[in-house]
Image 1 (spheres, helix red, strand yellow):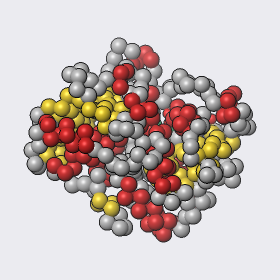
Image 2: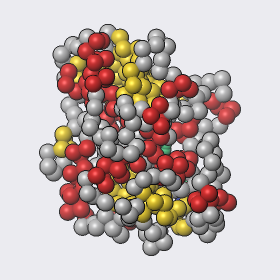
Image 3: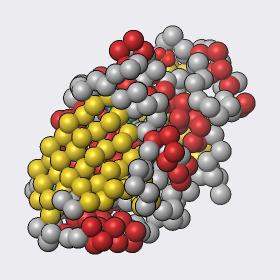
Length: 342
Ligand SMILES: NC(=O)C1=CN([C@@H]2O[C@H](COP(=O)(O)OP(=O)(O)OC[C@H]3O[C@@H](n4cnc5c(N)ncnc54)[C@H](OP(=O)(O)O)[C@@H]3O)[C@@H](O)[C@H]2O)C=CC1
Ligand SMILES: N[C@@H](CC(=O)OP(=O)(O)O)C(=O)O
C-alpha cells in the first residue's frame, strides 16, 4: 500500500517534534514536508530544530530541508498542525482551501461551528461536519481539530459514563510544564511551586467538553446539556496531566458500576495503529495513577484512572504531548484514512 504523504506545520517546536517521532515510522503515513518559520526555512531540520525528546532524531528527518509554512511549498496530502494558535487561525484555512486535509492540534478553530473537534473513541460521528464545512466554504480540503490536552484526558473517561446521565462535572487539574512549551514557564517560577493559573485553560475545558459530548444532528453539533466547572493548575511535572474529576449523574451509579464502565469501554478502533489497548487503564493501587509511573502506557496514548470513590470522584492522567497533542491528531488522521477521507 502506498503511504499517504504527510507534512508537519510547526515541525521544529515541542509538539512538532512529537509529530515527527510518531510519524517517522508510521505504517500509513510518510513524512514528506517539514515546515516552520522563516528562522528555520532553508536549513536542514537537524540544524534548525533543537531536538528535545528522549528518542533519537530520525536520521532521514535530520537531513530534510525545512520549508516555509506555505501551501505552495509543502508537498503532502495531509498536514499536521502544531502552529502557534494565532498563526493557525489564518494558515490552517489557507491549507484547507488549497486542498490539504489539516489535522490540527491548535486551539484556534476548535470551537468554530463547522469545524469538527474530535477524539476517535468519543465522537467519531462528528467527522460528518467535514461535508458541511466543505459545502459552506467551498474548500477542496478540510480542517479537523483535536481538543486541549486537559479536555482530552477527562473526556475519554466521561464517554463510558454518559449512559448514567451526566448532570454536572467538576475538574481540578495538575498540569505538566511541557504543556506550555519549552520556554513557556520560567524555571524560577515553577521550581518548588504550584501556579494556580493557565491562560484560557478553564474556558477551553468547559466549552470543548460540551462540544465533544454533544450530538451531531446532520448539520451542526448540539452541545451536551450538562455544566462543566474547571480549575486548572501548573505543577512541577515534566509530562503528564493529572486531573481530579467529580461527576454528578442522574442514575446515581455505584463505584463498582463506574469501574465496570471503564473496564468494559471498547470503542472498536483496534485497527488504527495508534489506538492503545486498553484505552482506559483502571489502576487498583491506592496511590495511582501517577504521571512518572503511568504516562507512557500504551505508547503514551492510554488514559489511566484510579481512586474511584463515591460522589462520584476519581483521578485520571495521561501524557499531555502524546495523548493530549500529537498522538491525538495522528489518531484523528488514522480514523480519517479508515473512513476514506484521505
Ligand atoms: N492539544 C493540546 O492541548 C496541546 C496543544 N498545543 C498547541 O500546539 C501548538 C504548538 O505548541 P508548541 O509545540 O509547544 O510550540 P513551540 O513554540 O514549541 O513551536 C512552535 C512552532 O511553530 C513555528 N512558528 C512559530 N512562529 C511562526 C511563524 N511566524 N511562521 C511559521 N512558523 C512559526 C516554530 O518554528 P521555528 O522553530 O522556526 O520558530 C515552531 O516550529 C500551539 O498551538 C499549542 O497551543 C501544545 C501542547 C498541547
Ligand atoms: N494549555 C495547555 C497546552 C495547550 O497548548 O493547550 P491548547 O492546545 O488548548 O492551546 C497546557 O498548558 O498544558
